[in-house]
Image 1 (cartoon, rainbow, N blue to C red):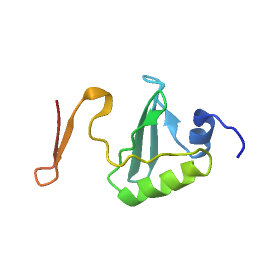
Image 2 (cartoon, rainbow, N blue to C red; image 1 turned 90 degrees about the vertical axis):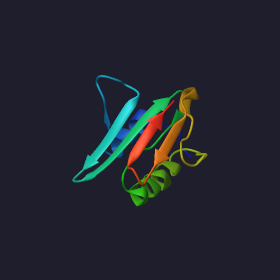
Image 3 (cartoon, one colour; image 1 turned 30 degrees about the vertical axis):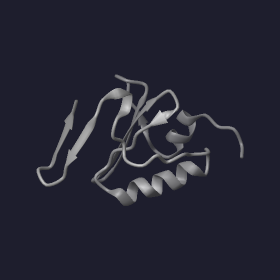
Length: 92
């Protein structure tokens, strides 16, 4: 596998790097949005469409060795609680 840099690959996959935060990438195509904050060698993916995330993870896996740890529940020591019935997210 050829060694590549993450920003190069994300640009090829049509992600935009945010000027306000260089470690935040966003993909927008029609109604589809994927938000990806990066912290050192960890990244979190956010989208309303689970299938879009799965496709992106497979595509990214063609360029890098990945370890999918499942849903994010405590990044940087912040606990995330999802309440799907109330359509809410709580941070503590």
